[in-house]
Length: 288
Image (tube, rainbow, N blue to C red; front, side, top):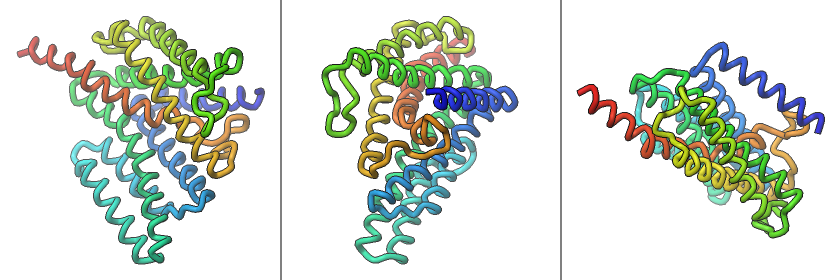
């Protein structure tokens, strides 16, 4: 517990210092770095399962995807994703047997889609906000609101599950997860989401009222459980307790980002189509 606490403090200090010095661009850089390191750990776990991901090729393709999501004048993401798949397929078929190629292709493409492609969503949110004339502080607060709400589901779920959990939720993949833990995590996420909504009101969308915050917090909490379950399955197959050893008491980068990989993209889509869309339409009508 002491190691976990120290690691958490150091991570928080590093993130806070980066954002303080570099602002929104620092946030994007942190997402980029976390995406690459998570993909690396994911590929290492897949290799322990017996898969043969093309680690260097997959990570380079992932880096290109994330860079494009930040860059405004490059090719579309779907075009780069298509090219990434072609590169992986050709390299695998030219350098391996048919059976090995199959394991190379599937595992490499899964790694690209599950991690760097997912990271493109929070990165592209910055581009969307800047394009519509909103401040970088708006991006930082919105992103951190979603991250904190998501991670609080882990905290609430762990506490409630440990003390009150009785009904197993995914016994074949993660025996410690319970229905009570999930409900407790959702409740805690909602409470934190509402509190932060009032504390950061000026830097969050005005359309993000309490009802919307509850709906979004619930979705983030549910899909954080999905991401955590995916990592649990991979680690169980690889017979590993943690994805890495970079953070004493916590594990690896993947152990930190697992709950964010599926929840944050969904949060960005929710903001785009249910929050920002109405804001931008109302603003355009007002000014025209």
